Image (cartoon, rainbow, N blue to C red; front, side, top):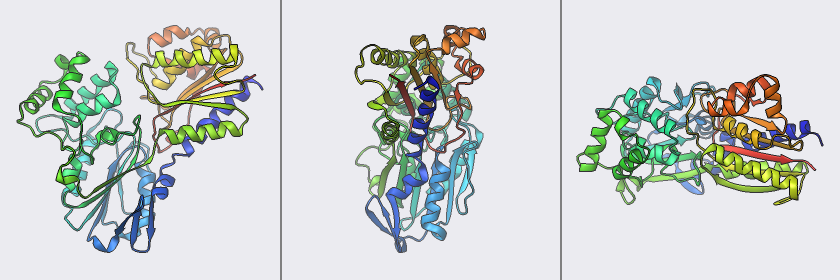
Length: 443
């Protein structure tokens, strides 16, 4: 087996993982129609009971999820609007797609979120609202609380991204400066029946965190928000309007997000239809079919990118050295989502940075390939899903006048891998269940 074969297999294994969480198939697995009865995860809903059916939502997988719902409900849909990331579209009949900014929200997202709120708000007791949520949904539903502008909310988002806050922390803050997140979309929809189909992009699939939980009870509080902003030492850097809103919330002058037990959730049904572990297990199955001994580390991996990369590289070196924890040919798989603390001014994403850090640690090993990529096909603000490396990556970079450590320190992995032809370019996959990381070791 050659390194080129390892690289080829790594890409195949990654694509097998992505295919397993294709949104349209995920919807069809959990939602079926039997005549005039809609079955959602085994729960029946008679279509004859509803005067109007509205479809709303947000996320990178919104288009294929909506296509699946249109196929099931055909002409029963009265109106629909979903905010999706630019370029993540496909032709639909009854549901409008609104392209908007991600990961930093923009005016298009604001306009779409406002229209979604108005559509949901007009739903009555005998209406059905179907909400489609997928990765990126939080940034794609920007509807700031009164007194806070979109620019000010964007500034808070940028500060949180730059300081290394994880998705749970970011969403806790976003929910409390929003009119729609943290169960507040369910508040707007009540007393209509509300079904939410969720493609999870968060470790452990916590419903209140995915897309900032617009249709589920919120477990975070204004006190949590203040603690997060203090811990990352950015309270003094956020806009005064955001501070004032949070202080009003702390004083009880602004209502908390709805909590468990609130009557507004009595007609709400939330269903996770796809998650990272499904992609991880599909990747494992593909690797086994290619002849590899496999080990799934975890779908709960999180932490600072460089640290996680070094741990994965250490596993690769152990397999080469001792054949543990599994003998070669080996494929070690992990999922989850790691974070980057931005200190440089370069171009890249967490997956590219992971691979660059790992490349430095496996330098000189001729029997190892490491791949890391986002299942959505985009890594950070780049057009690459991620990258892959082998034991000669650092040396190949030096031959082109590039020092890996310098690019790593500048958060500048993209041009490094672009020059080597080692970026993984998939284009938008229209799904998002976080990341897949692969270590392949040959005999």
